[in-house]
Amino acid sequence: RASAVDERIAVATATRLVARLGGQFVRRGRRRGTIVLAGPCGEHHGLPLALVANLVRHAGFSVIELGTDTPPADLIEAVGRTGDLVAVGIGVTTTARLQAAIDLIAAVRAAHPAVPVLLGGQAVRNTEIAALAGATHWSAGPDLVGTLAELATARARRLGPPARGQAEVAPAA
Image (cartoon, rainbow, N blue to C red; front, side, top):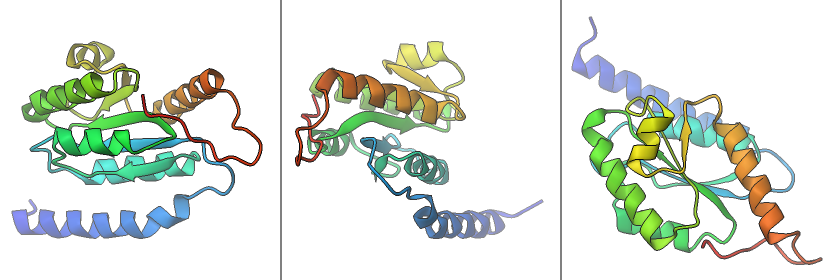
């Protein structure tokens, strides 16, 4: 059985590896939009968010990672300054942090009601829990990139193509 120290060393090593590999996941070409990722207040498991961020980058999205223990005001500010926002992703690993995730979702939905909010992680086992938490979408993991692609396509249809010579920028809603 591994001690708490062994566990800390393993997590720190894995986090360094994920950070080092992150640059390998950037895809060339046109960006599909930006995803903001965060963990709710009290959430301390950042490795899953870092892994998700790498997968999302590899799928052609820009990612703003706010990390764990994100206060609602910080997430709202990040959403407000992201012009090509496709969605917000919130990861919660324990049911003890589920209420904090609900509070984070409520804050985003109050400030930016049109922004899709995906909720996932070990504490969120199905669509019903995500819906009860106020999220617009649930992610079990493997479906995340497909869901984001659908949201990006829907956003592009709503906004239309950017004018020639202009960057794709839209209000965050």
